[in-house]
Image 1 (cartoon, rainbow, N blue to C red):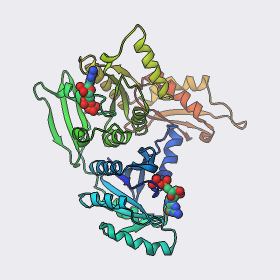
Image 2 (cartoon, rainbow, N blue to C red; image 1 turned 180 degrees about the horizontal axis):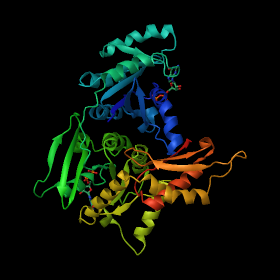
Image 3 (cartoon, helix red, strand yellow; image 1 turned 90 degrees about the vertical axis):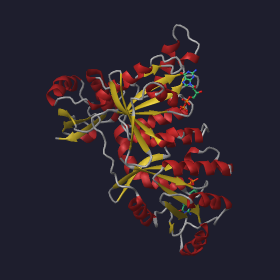
Image 4 (spheres, helix red, strand yellow; image 1 turned 90 degrees about the horizontal axis):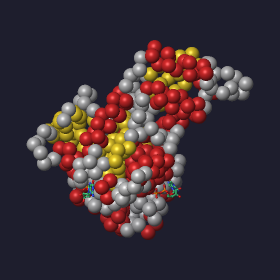
Length: 434
Ligand code: GDP
Ligand code: GDP
């Protein structure tokens, strides 16, 4: 379980430059494996052996040039709620601005590690100028230059030092489901419908982390942990329908679950915000179920559901092997189907295929459809195996792994899906030298 670090600050101070520097190294690895679209404002990083997720909060705000102060304040408040540590970035070129003072005032009250990064310190003159940021009352600051990387090592040393240790004991036996989606999609209603009014069959086990609470659900033959975040429970505090909020709220829950139940509002469609949450789940290699809620509000004709589903799948390309359940929390239509489906996806994700069985099925396919020759060389695949990872990953051993291109990997992924059923689960295919 990794910590979450939020980068806050007004526009143009260099947040995204710094963010990109942080995630670059790992990003390159992840993207070449999965071919997954990357979210430009959320990524993973590590420093001194400690892993953490980074969110560039500014990236989620549009028209950032004439951004309202109130907007930044909300952004900072949410970061304070949801993150484990905060990097507050300011710009030595402009010096202290009233907006910086505003943000500093919010951050001074916070009981979480806050790091003041004075950016664009490209030369010694600017290093002297940086002193004025003491006036923000946040104590020691880190003079950095995001473009060159100068000073960022010291900042990261201090940052990871302050991140909480991963102490949580996870109940490995039970599936962990997270209910995520944009505001107003019906997440709370869904959770209430599941655990609500009736007898209380739930226990709140406070996680060792401050913010997350797992709720054990055991009813109608289903048993799982609902991975909730304090953020979801405190949702009444923030009603704004901004992408930033739904992403920020979803990150922790998604990172800690096995399967994401992505609730969307049927009247709004599989829009950019929902897609972003979908990518987030995919990037984290979680199981995914799409729940199209408020289906009661949609006028239906013979093919409405089919057409609606086709449209969603189009947006999901290339990862389209994901279950879509049309439900209505209001009328309780298919809400248990939703859980049933999540359980299936969980099983698909934890599926382990014996090496003998795998080769029996895959070797004839590999023989009938070998990778195309590359530079006159033939790739010979000798055998394959599933790796002992929590989510399905397959290694194919061959003579020239570097010659196998993405389309062929996707071909194999699709064969694996067809033969073994990995619906709802991201599958990774690797080539290794043998
Ligand atoms: P954001 O709006 O806070 O995400 O800021 P950006 O990362 O987009 O950076 C805004 C501008 O500042 C860009 O033109 C960057 O090239 C520039 N910038 C970022 N870091 C530095 C730095 O360390 N030194 C200098 N001189 N410019 C920088
Ligand atoms: P959240 O922000 O995702 O937790 O959404 P809520 O659970 O607070 O629901 C937002 C609004 O949608 C509330 O007014 C709900 O009553 C309403 N709602 C939730 N599910 C349904 C549904 O299936 N059908 C209809 N018509 N309304 C729903």
